[in-house]
Length: 158
View 1 (tube, rainbow, N blue to C red):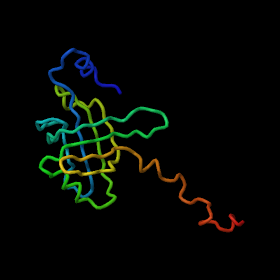
View 2: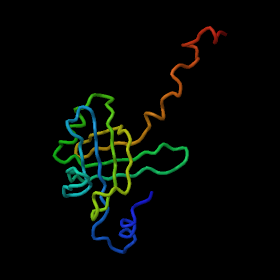
View 3: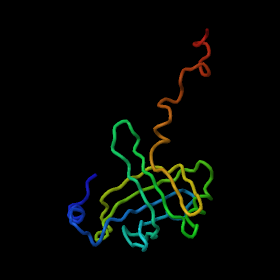
View 4: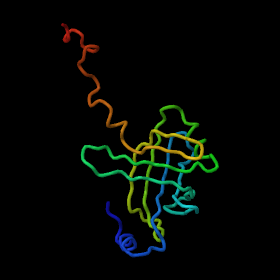
């Protein structure tokens, strides 16, 4: 993961008075506008939008061979608005999640971005957990029609 030169300088200092912020954008066709959150206790105006300050934790995806990149997300369900919005979605709904990392001193400069479908959403009282990754795409068959006993029974006679 590479970051901008200014963010790299701040991260290499002993103390960074500003810090790094994680932005999370959730989108679905049934949403009037995307849900935009910043992992902070204060709201933020960045990238031309207002981001709601909601504490959440993100474990960014590992860069390993033979492994689907997957981020783990856990957020507070403060006020229950976010959980209610997610619970109102139909079963099997596909949310698009975009995770961005910015430095507080330059919130309009994106240092890192990861975009993938969000699945495995669980609303458990005060917390919401989910997985952001391309598992659904990686598990589908590579071909539409396969030759097996159900599609071509004459080939598979005993």
